[in-house]
Amino acid sequence: MSVPLSRRSVLRGAVLLGAAAGGTALTQLGDDRGARAVTTPVDQPVIANCATWSARPPSSAVTVVQNRPNKIIVHHTAFPNSTDYSLAHAYQNSRDIQNLHMDTNGWLDSGQHFTNSRAGYLTEGRHGSLYALLHGQTMVQGAHCVGQNSQAIGIENEGIYLDVQPPQALWDSLVLFCAFTCQQYAIAPTEIYGHKDFNSTQCPGLLHGRLPELRSAVAARLG
Image (cartoon, rainbow, N blue to C red; front, side, top):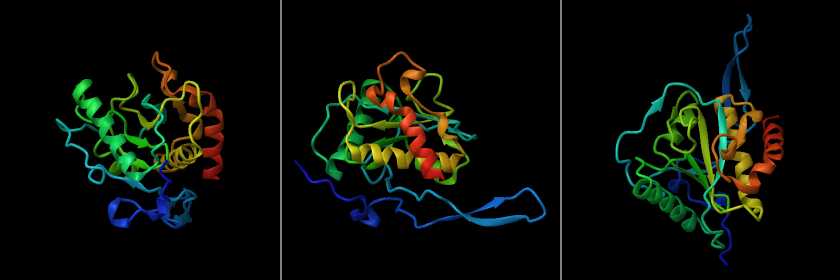
């Protein structure tokens, strides 16, 4: 079994983002004190953009929604639970998902906005999702949950969790990703859901029962 690499060992040139150290932002106080710099509580996680994992181009232009999303929806891929925890496998997993979504489902690109591997490596899913997340004002329309694709960020977690829990690395990465996404888009931690909350599916398996734990962990990260 491959030994998981530390995400901090990933070369800076291989990803769009590095883990930022204590970023700052301007916030409007709403009174005569004006604006002041405040420290954001959640650092940017390392997220490999589409070019980094060699994504195919979309078959047609993605749609950019000129609003912030109002929730996060958690999925699992239902792919077998691989014991390959390498970065290369995480990138291949993203390619496999994109191929399935484009070639079998007939979608223009990966349906989800982001993907989380069993080793906790995060990748951009649908093109443009990472740019939108970093700017925090718009979102790309996805294809991950009927009725929610223009208002919810979809995060796919590699594996199938109907009978087993995900690895700790995946869970920790999911918490960090959700906390950062909530911070960027001003989404309340209570607005984190599972796929089965909206569509008839078993997805995301046992992760659904842990949503209260996930919401609490995200709230704690946000301070």
